[in-house]
Image (cartoon, rainbow, N blue to C red):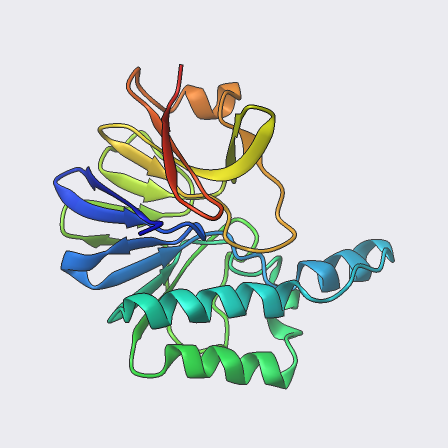
Length: 214
């Protein structure tokens, strides 16, 4: 199997190669930083035209992960949309696709810095949510036992950089799930100051691979 199974704050977790996190005991699938509508936002603000395929690519990946894990609850951990106008500009086909993914599931949109307000796309809108011992929010805080996103961490091994989960005994930061998203190197000061000495990067790609950070 290409996923990586590990224990975080007394909770069994599965890091999927796509960058999604599955919590089987809680029947939860968590993804972070989809940044849907990024190409539309860039075109609107700068006039630079990018191929508008990132919404389809991201939703295809999410549909596959939902089908594989069949969660009762899906948590989108903030910056699900590149801005609120991008959320409102999704075409009808994409809105219907999201509605199909949400059908029969508890769907939670966590507030991010790119999408700080409610959206009219089903589900519920929360600043954070606690499940079991874990609190899910967009940006890391001094609190412990939290899962967050925002930083889009990446880790490099033998010249190849890939989106990565970062975690230690108290904190887990998710990789960006969406297409067209950049990333912050795992050794960047803004990330390393959040973690203790025993930090693991789980690189995504064809297989989720854990790598201890130096």
